[in-house]
Each structure stands twice: as structure tokens, then as C-alpha cells.
Amino acid sequence: MRTVCVVGAGMSTWGEVWRKSFRQLFVDAALEAIEKSGVDHLDSLYIGCMSGGLFVHQEHLGSLMADYLGMAGIPATRVESACASGGLAVRSAYIEVASGMSDIVMASGVEKMTDCHGDDASAALATAADQEYEVFHGATFPGLYAMMAHAHMAKYGTTRQMLTAISVKNHFNGSMNPVAQYPFKVKPETVESSVMIADPLRILDCSPITDGAAAVILTTEEIAKKLGKPYIKIIGSGAATDTIQLAQRADMTTIKAATLAADRALRMAGKTLKDVNFAEVHDCFTIAELVILESIGLYAPGKAGAAILAGETALDGKFPINTSGGLKSKGHPVGATGVAQVVEVYKQLTGQAEGGRQLKSRPKIGMTQNMGGSGGSSVVHIMEVA
Amino acid sequence: MSQFSSRSWREYPQRYRGEASKFTKSGKTYYPPRTIDPETGDKEQTLVKLPDTGKVLTYTVIRVAPYQWGDNAPYGLAIVELTDGTRLMGQMADVNVDEIKIGMEVRVEFRRIQTEGHSGIISYGHKFTPKWW
Image (cartoon, rainbow over all chains, first blue to last red; front, side):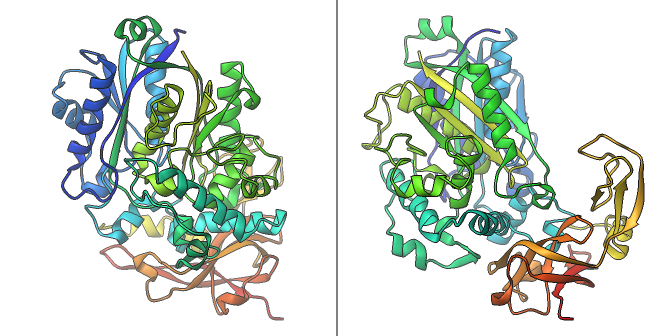
């Protein structure tokens, strides 16, 4: 397989973006990525999107997005794995370049979630769970993660303060990210007095509903060098699935798909977590970030909470997590999230992170962990400075 | 979204009668029924009826509910392990939501679950109630 590089990244405005349509969000992100990379064409396009159909009644995204990017004619593929759609789009583009099939491929993600009523958006998101045996009984996504939280609290003594620290940290990081939907700091007491959604999770434990898009250009090292723009290498890609129903998992306090995806990506990269300097992980809920850090092996089961409280995962900690603000502060346009995680690692590794959130430790290797549903799928990438 | 009744009645054997797959090699039971034992790959199975008692493995209280249950919130939602080891999710009923606990013993009861879609099909299935005897 050929070495694959990321050269150029773009992001649309993120938030409740009433003035931009589904297609315009994509075009904004895609054009920025093309401009920053200096490429003059695309051989192929991947679009991660969970549910254009349910959010805005639009499918056939390959045609629509290639068309409005002014590139009708190129092959374009829409990729879906619920909230991990973006990560899987990056992986698909990676495979296409690595295989030699194409030289210049865009991996993008987009979701337009605020053109419909909140009830309908929640119902669309709920399709990432088992419709007949979870959603049928009244499960919601906050509810599923809340059940993981109660199980984790009962097994390991995980506390409210540990979850609060994750929300406070991610909002602090996001306060420095110009594209973040909620770029402000929150106080612990604000998190702990925010409205209860599904016990023990409060609104400030939950990622928001967001409109947004992200895009990166993947190409060979030879072309990346010729373009003369900052680039990084993707050295590992791992993906995995698990049962769609939370109830069917032997251990509800860990996410096996994340464990498998991380192991596969690290093995492919020939690295261990000790070689990795920082990560963007899928904090759709505060408890998710805590469980993921244990699932990928950064901390032993039950040990992540204390490490988070000690500041180990802060911007100036020994293993910064979610320097972008994570899904919590930056926003979570589900199909775009996995691509935006790669955008953040690209910025950090090329020294381009804005607003004072650039890591001062001169990181060499970064990781992204994207997740679908309650952990039914996960995609991990390992990236290294060129 | 409009839905045809076939989507509901197809599920009646498991939702109304609690039918589940018991695989021969592993002896494990799965709900709802499935073709292949995910642990052993075994296809040889018998349909069994789920036991009607178990205990709460984990739970939450849904306070912001999907529109079908807007009037019911807050309600408890639990993952229960039945006496034969089968696990399933369902709502808690006839209980003060503040009294739901991990380890709580429950009974599986046949209840009205929701009215589905624009066609308004009334759907039934299991809910869990505290075991009081």
C-alpha cells in the first residue's frame, strides 16, 4: 500500500446555521480544503452523512455534492455509519489512495440538523440504535449513555465530579476554537445545576445538535510534497463493529468497538499508545469520553476518572484530549464529526491550531476515535508529522 | 412516517409471547430471536419462552422523552437480566422513578408501549415492574 497524506483541511461554520443550506455547508468546507491544499482536481469524493434523508429529506448525496462543488462527473460515494460516518469516509478515501486506485481524494462529512423540529432530529438520531428493541421501548441516546454511566458508577465508583471535569475541560478548549458552536467556558456548578436529561446525564453532559461540514484532501506523499503545503501522514486506520443493542454487551462499562479499532490502527502504524501524544475522541456525552479513554487502553478500567480530575487530559496535561473542544463544545453535526477530528489533528501536527489552543509540546503523533450509536461501530486513525 | 401493520405483527411472537432463541451448543438464550449464535456461530436452536423475573443491571430515568412518551416522562428505562441470563431493555412501570436501583428485582409484564407513526398502531410488549412478593 502507498503512504497516504492529509494536505489541506476545511470546515464550514458550525452551529445553528439558518442562512446556509445542507449543500452550501458542504461546499464551504470542501472549497476551503481544496484551496488550502492547492490541488486542481479531485479523482474521487467521499461524503460521510448519517441521515440527509431524515434531517432534510435529501439522499443521493454523491450526485448533489459533486454537482454543487462544480465537479459533476467524478465518482462520489456517500458513507454511513451513524455518528461514525465521517471517520468511515476518511477510511474509505484512505483505502482508495493507499490502493493506488486514485491519487487525490476528498474525505468530507456533512449534516444539517436544525432544519427540522427537535423531536424529529432526536428521532433521526435514534435510528442509530435498534429501532425495534431499544427505540421501540422509549430509549433515547442520552438514555443509552446514561445507562452506561450508572453501570460505570456502580462498578468503579465513578463520580459526578469526574463527568463535570470533562465538560469543563472541553468547553475550555472549545473557547479557543473559532468554529466551535459553543465557544465559551462553563463552571462546574453550571454543569451540575443544568437540566437533567436522562439521569445521571444533564444537558451540559450532552453534545448539541449542529449544522456543519468538514473536509480534508488525501493524496500520495509524492503529490503532497509537490503541492508545497503543510501535510501529515496517516499511518494507521482501524474500524470495528459491535452489537447494536447495549443490552447485548457482556460489559456495558467498556466500548469494545473502540478497543478493536484502536488496536487495529496502532498495530497497522507499528506504534503503541505511548508513542501517541494527543487524541480527539468521540465525547458525544461526558461519560463516553471517560469510557473511551479506558476502552482504547489509555487508562485501566475505572482509572480514567481520577486522571481526568488530576488534569492529565487537559490542554497542558500529559495526554491532551479533545483540544478542539470535542463534540461537547465544538458541536456534533453527526456525519461531519469524524472528519473534523482529522482536521484538528492536522492543525495540531502542522502548528496551525488557532486561538491559543495549539499544543506547545510539539506533538509528533495524534489519534482520532470516532464512534457510531452507543458503540455499535468505531473508527480510529493514527497520524504522524511528515 | 406511515408504517404498515406488517412491521408490528411480524414482531408479535417475541413481543407478545416473549419468544427467544436458545442455541444448542452454548445453551445461551437471545432476545429477540436470531438465526446465528454470535458466540459460537451455531444455527441449531429451539424457540423458548423467556422467564418472567430478573434484576436490573443498569437504568436511567428519561426526563426529556421522544414525542410518543411526552406525557409519560419522567419514566424509568432499564436493562434487565432475566433468571436464565437473557438481557433485554424495557421501561419500568408502577414504580416511583427515584426508587429504581441497580440490582432491583423485577417482574416482566405485558403492557401497552406506544402508538406508532401516523397510522397510530397501538403496540404492546414488555415492561418491568418491581417484584413485591
